[in-house]
Length: 166
Image 1 (cartoon, rainbow, N blue to C red):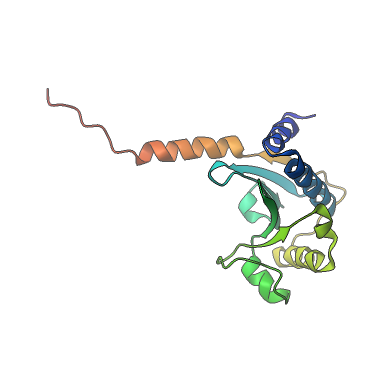
Image 2: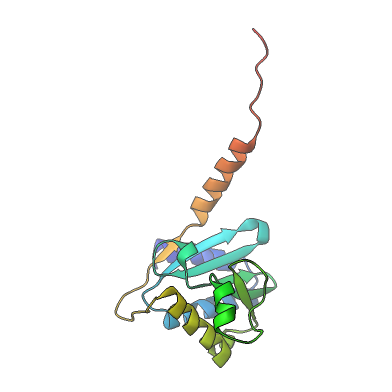
């Protein structure tokens, strides 16, 4: 098991057994559906969320879709959800964000539903991404970078201490 896989396993352990099992199953299905794409892992502590983005680059914000695991459920996010909701008719996509929309997932088998498969296929077409089974996808953990960036932002947001006059 690689260092990145070990870290991801640790993040899954922070959820209850049912949620951890769901998250692992969703990851497995998406890994099989989107071969060759990078898996970029983020941890959003303020939302208690573990997010894995599937991207053709090392940047999660360029991802085709992402799974979000929460203590009480899971969601499949589409980063071009505003465009996607117009391309794939129906009321499956939730959210009113300018770009990100999601589908609530109850089980890993939800990814096998034809309407969700249609969303994934349309998202790939919109992003002009072709999964390639001949290419091995790479797992990238960005959770630690996130924590460091947040700490720097918090530190720079503090007012400077005034020194007493000499």
